[in-house]
Image 1 (cartoon, rainbow, N blue to C red):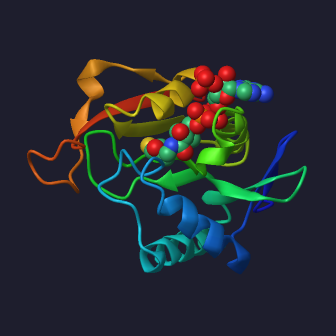
Image 2 (tube, rainbow, N blue to C red):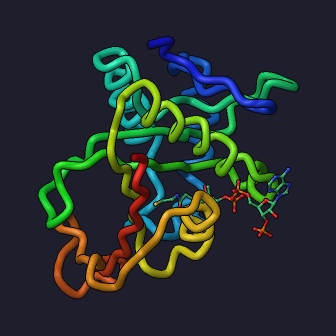
Length: 179
Ligand SMILES: CC(C)(COP(=O)(O)OP(=O)(O)OC[C@H]1O[C@@H](n2cnc3c(N)ncnc32)[C@H](O)[C@@H]1OP(=O)(O)O)[C@@H](O)C(=O)NCCC(=O)NCCS
């Protein structure tokens, strides 16, 4: 395993300390965090970056920092993660993404995710990858659809980390069979 992936326009790589400031900026953006309970403080953002970095260190794969090949700019993350809660579809590996708003609308999330899916299939030998999001997150659902992932309504679920009645609790699950 290489610990990093490359596409035409993007590098999926381990995290660096220089990612922390731009990561905090995107995590503080209410539009980026619209489908999460709240934007993150600098402390919360740094803690998340360290958790994601530790995951890559431990496994050799994970939610990689995403950098443009053209100018080396950090634009967010994309990658794979074991689902961290119990649900009807776990244990499972999920694919996820979060990009700075300036990087939206360029196909970056889909391009990076395709590389992560190839890794999941070729290197990890996974049979299936899932993805999920709050029902109203149309942009994220569009990425899932572009990747060929499919949702069936009987897989919809309520996220266990959110309290009953929370508007972000209803989630959709998308699946992709890799073999
Ligand atoms: C979810 C998220 C990553 C999607 O970003 P996105 O830019 O919409 O998705 P992509 O990177 O795949 O880009 C697709 C768009 O780029 C356009 N595009 C431009 N150039 C392109 C190219 N060379 N190749 C492919 N698409 C291109 C596509 O037409 C599409 O545009 P559209 O949105 O008008 O249909 C982004 O909205 C985000 O970070 N949201 C906040 C975090 C979040 O909610 N994460 C998911 C939690 S589950």
